Image 1 (cartoon, rainbow, N blue to C red):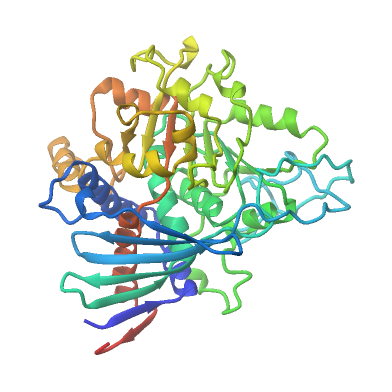
Image 2 (image 1 turned 120 degrees about the vertical axis):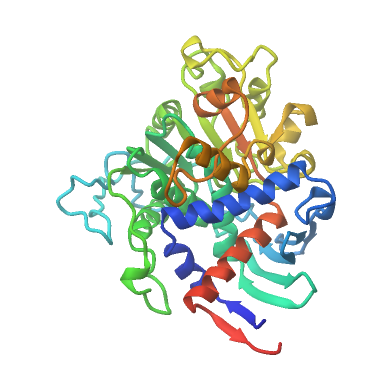
Length: 457
């Protein structure tokens, strides 16, 4: 079998060509792998016993290189990526700070919206600059840069893939497993404006675009955040290699209205608190070393009056955190019994992780909250295997490809809590996720003739 080589542009082209059913298929493959990771013994290649912990190398410029080997049912692979230091001093403030909330919007009712671009961005009058906390964003991109190498079961090279876009996609693909099962997703709040933020929003809209009414992006740089919004509806406008054919890009629904909030806004704290309290879903995608908002906004009686889904995926070292540890402590409070919901302002919730072992060693939120292994649940323990999902659908008389995609398993009380209660998902990333999703991307690339193939490598 030839070696398939995929550039960053190749990977972007493939990922943006995936429709909802395609995403369901790739997500189900990832769900199967995570299920076997969490539950299988040594009779499956995805078992945790075959997944070594990643190794990190910190360089003298402050950057960190991660080496992430992994095994799957189809072979083995290793991802090597470098992340810039999140502590780089931020650039000087913009003399004409842009601020937000009602200044940037997209709507299916807008007369100026098109299928490829956003509505015009209005710029407010200059306001006094309130300096943001250093945890909001870094001055330079911290997107992982590197490659993923895949080998088949015999050890022969199968693929070499640029890992930048793939890493963000596979992380968001896991995050939205529970998002797409939530009862209410009307208001989505996103911290960050990089690739991780982009793919969390894109997949959220692709899978549940008719249910998402508002998306608020919190970032220090208004221009970068507004560029993310434009990219959602015209993802190849800035590509040096030229835009992908329009037919290859799956367009997103235009129902949601977008807003951008920056710390330069003179009422930043009040508006941020309002957005946090209003949000049904919060995506945290920054390499922060301090909480992005006070715990009290969620842990107080007022903050507990609604259930939320929070995915925290930006921090990946013990000293890093985006979500205050008190929020996690409250989520594992013993009073919670999976039967009482937000209208009673009950404490408690559920803390889910991609890997208990990895998060107890690397996830700042989990470590600083002092959580024990029995207080967190791996995502793989909750997802249903494809074969079991198909059997359930057949017994129920459901037909059609994909239907609603991957399913969650558990008793009625647990499933109801996961759909309506307070749920926190913390991920530091697994090499297994890269190998499984990368394998699917290579399969799709070969089917569609994307990339370069080298015979006899």
